[in-house]
Length: 375
Image (cartoon, rainbow, N blue to C red; front, side, top):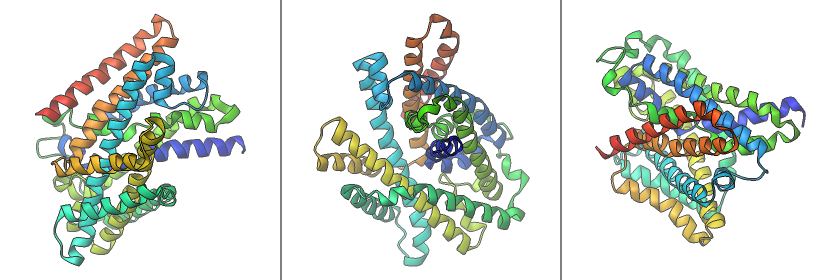
């Protein structure tokens, strides 16, 4: 493979992994805090996330291959680091699967309820879950392999929506009723934006893809993070500009009042495809963690993977924004701290001026998200 192809493939892999369900939470966040505050979050957290990913990239280059984050934590921090990393990864994946379940069921309800006249979110969520659970049980990977194509199609439809809906976009929709800078909800976007930018788990895989050209990783990471930022800002601009204060938690379901049923139905269909393929991918990944890493039986691993998120949903964890914020702000914050502690192990005390402030930011975010969740 030529160097150019390696670079393109590496950027596409990392960017494609970063862009996920967090996308759908962002317009709602902007409707609460204001468009300019969200832009500020992308600037600040974009820099922080890029630094942490670059640090992890350096660790990946200097560490023997074929490790993932728990393996890195064990290598540098010992068994305690590995256990914390594994627990964070499992809980974070459960949270992400739950988020896909919430938003996927919502999309399915919006798409089908006008047709079959069943108005029950639980019914559509159970249909979405059942189809996904069956595919995860049999380990069918083909649907997960079309994940990137579904996402590409989804964004082509968004461009079509932009062309059609441009007259509906209003400048006043970018300013919430409380004013352009809603300080009362200032910290609300932290977890969601962090979730939407995070792709550290793929850094070792991208490093391995580069083969002998590992030094290219330092240039690939910023570009691979910048691409999702541009996509997110466009998505926020489009959805918020159309729906304004009526923006829903999952973004797409609020479009029906403004656009024709045909284009909304197509958008919802591709939204379902994009979320469903990711739901399968995460489910297969978590099943393998239980099965291969923790030596739990195959069927029990499947049951744990699928039914714990469903049980959480049935127990009342149905707020998409709450789940995304908690996973992003708390669990990904733990991953960030572990990466920084690993880096500190390899360097002198002089690097504390970089790692310590970042650790304090992550700790503050963890405390805020947990406190906010317990309210």
